[in-house]
Length: 164
Image (cartoon, rainbow, N blue to C red):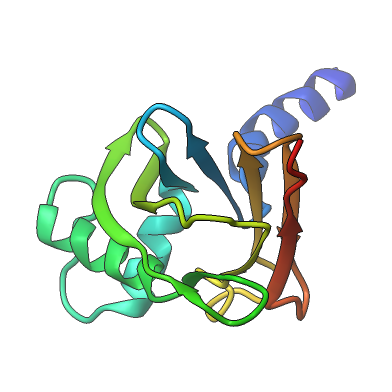
C-alpha cells in the first residue's frame, strides 16, 4: 500500500516537474538553395507565456494574439545578433513567428555574406529574465555542424568555417 501511495504522489507531481530547465534551441542554417542564412528560434511555449507576462503590461495572449506574438518576436530580435570577427554587423530580417504545439518559433534570415570565414553570435533572449536560461545554437550547412551554448555569463560565441 505504501508503494502505491508513493507511485501516486510521483504521478501527481510529475507534470509540474516536466519542464524545469529554461532553454531554447536555435538553428542557424546556411541554405545552399537560397544563399540565405536562416535562423529558427524554438522556445518552449510555457516559457514564452511566462516571459511575456513579465515583459509586457496588460492582458497578453501569446497563443492566439498575433500582435502579442509579434511583440515577443521583436524582443527575441533585440537579443540576437550576428557579426563577423572584424566587427561587421550581419543585419537580420524578421520572417515570422508561430505557435506550433508546445513550442513558439521565431524566424529570421539574411543574405549570406560573401567570403564568410567566421561569425560572432549573441543570443541573450530570456537570460535577462532568468539567469539560468540556456540558449543553444546549432550552426548547419557550412561544414560540420557546430553547437554553441549560451549559459552563465557567456554573451558572445564564435564559429569558424573551413573552406574546402
